[in-house]
Amino acid sequence: MEPEEPRETREAGPGAESAAAPRWEEAKTFYDNLAPKKKPKSPKPQNAVTIAVSSRALFRMDEEQRIYTEQGVEEYVRYQLEHENEPFSPGPAFPFVKALEAVNKRLRELYPESEDVFDIVLVTNNHAQVGVRLINSINHYGGNSPICYLKAYHTNLYLSADAEKVQEAIDEGIAAATIFSPSRDVAVSQSQLRVAFDGDAVLFSDESERIVKAHGLDRFFEHEKAHENKPLAQGPLKGFLEALGRLQKKFYSKGLRLECPIRTYLVTARSAASSGARALKTLRSWGLETDEALFLAGAPKGPLLEKIRPHIFFDDQMFHVAGAQEMGTVAAHVPYGVAQTPRRTAPPKQAPSAQ
Image 1: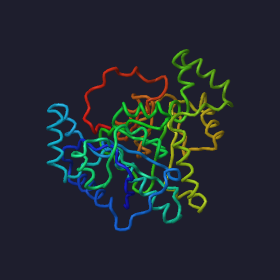
Image 2: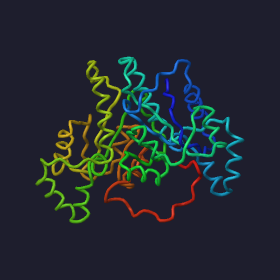
Image 3: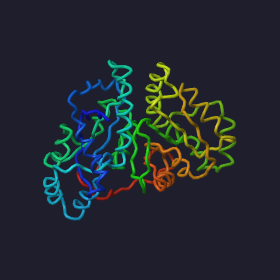
């Protein structure tokens, strides 16, 4: 693996209790490779597919978060300083980032001069003293709220463990999701990036979910049949699927469709017979496709995701996110649409780096 060097750091923060030796070694290898002898040229933000990942999504920081909550900020900073030379253990976004970099390696072999690659940005907003623990390995630091930076870097996807910041990004029109660790580890592909999307309120708008909520399933089926040939409006992650499709076509043009290191999935509770056609026709109207479209007709998504083994699965409903977690899938919640619960007025206390 030859990881990209994150170009920006907008959030440094809580680490994690020691993990099993193999996981620690994997994290150490990741750190060691962040500064290769010959660094790839950083692409211009407008040319790349920019993936912004918060430090608490990329690394496990449970112990530091506990110290901050129970003992306060001074003890939290002291702990970070004492442990600044210890690598963090891999977090939920770690396998996804590794898969992005595996795709980049293939792209650079085929298109050495192209800037149309994944550009991975580490986002952090911690105190400088705490940030040293990340800076020692990544050599970048800065900022407060990440939203202005996400816009400046034309961010295609923002992943964070902080639901408040994710909601802020969604409200500003940035594709974003709160990422969660699975309940158990499941091996994922080392050579092919696999990304699974829910349809409504993720790739598509929440138009159809509003019909279900207001009028029930029978009216929903009638509505979808009557509007089968009318494309749905786009949802918050449509642009990210579009970016993945653009990179896939770079492999297709070299005759590598069957060997493409990117594979996408539509995993939806819709029924193929009663409401699937509109989803597929909407994608077609956008000039997009997924490699597989799976219509579960209301069945649980977790067991199917366990077989697909994506690096990440996006859904707007926490029920499906939890079901995916239970089966070993890294799942990310997209806080968009009618299915969301009312926002909290008093968010729980978070460490400064809790993104």
